[in-house]
Amino acid sequence: MRYAAAYVLAILGGVATPDVATVSKILGSVGIDCDKTKAQKVIDSCKGKDIEQIIAEGTKKLSALPAGGGAAAPSAGAPAATTDAKKGAAKEAPKKEEKKKEESDEEGDDMGFGLFD
Image (tube, rainbow, N blue to C red; front, side, top):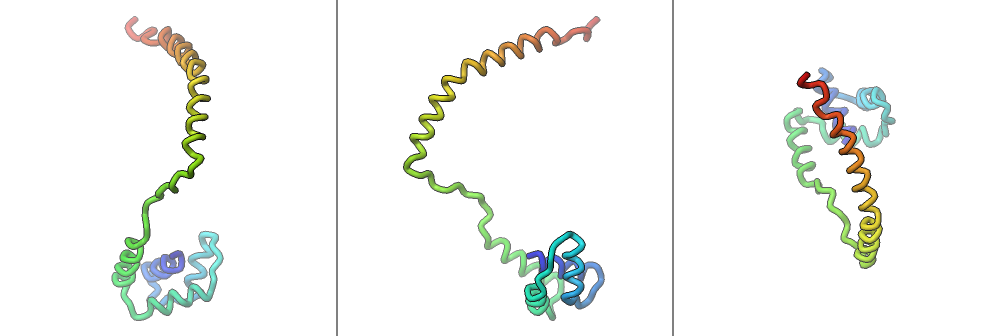
């Protein structure tokens, strides 16, 4: 993908027929090492095509890729771990509520102070 992007950038930058050196220079400008074999493969596959055609073909290929970050199916041991976590959370819950009360008491004293004087 990076090689194709560099190739298209070269064309958009005014280079009519980008070569490996051009693609390598573009990739190097952002700190990416260029594999000359891969760059040449992209150049060969893009030869004779206009930029709109290259972008259209690339868009079709990208749309075929899965886009979701689907979660893996839970294992058999996952429900037990969840139950243990709920028990631990229940024990800690009152402590958290006490902190919230303290914070809200402190905030209540400051609310509106000096606004209507």
